[in-house]
Image (tube, rainbow, N blue to C red; front, side):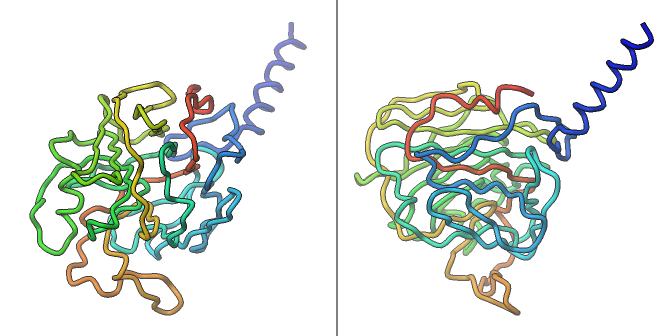
Length: 288
């Protein structure tokens, strides 16, 4: 009996020692994050231990640059990138044609929210722009809609997609090739604060689907191709990319007349992936 108890103690300790790191919520995952596959356009694992370089594990190696007001911390798998309420809290990836989705895509990420935005929304990852003809797609979290008419903040560009969404709802928006307003879709449930949540949005050319923690939350029939754009890809924030400049070798928002971080994400992002097809399952998200 004593031998059996000792063996069980060793086994439990052994499992704990080899388990992946958790994160702010101290989550221990038994499953590993998915590796890049043939339809992975980009995969930012956020596993850096510091610095501003954010590496892409996908085929095209589309690495990004983090703003100076981000840092790294324990994530859902390995490390994650921490975003704060600052205009210099972002990850910037230069424009690339591979981000033009066409008729099908999947956007997914692990998200840990500390707070919802006070304003219309906080982007998770997007190719959205104050220039209407460069608005392509947006995945983010709805906010409290305070001060939506503030001039010069880009509120009009996000206000026209946030609508009457509830704080914490997952939001997907995209502009099609056809003239007209952006297509906007929201989850029925909200993304809880202070816990890791896997979010995903898919489109197969006929149906948009939103997933929370690997489970289908909402779907809507629609058609059309996503408009191509020359806008860069930005994670964790929204601003006019023309405001960016380099100061002391760091990428910073330098030319903004209003430095208030209206749309900055407050929390962490991990395992951000873009795929060129509509995925139908997310096995790494279904175990908690």
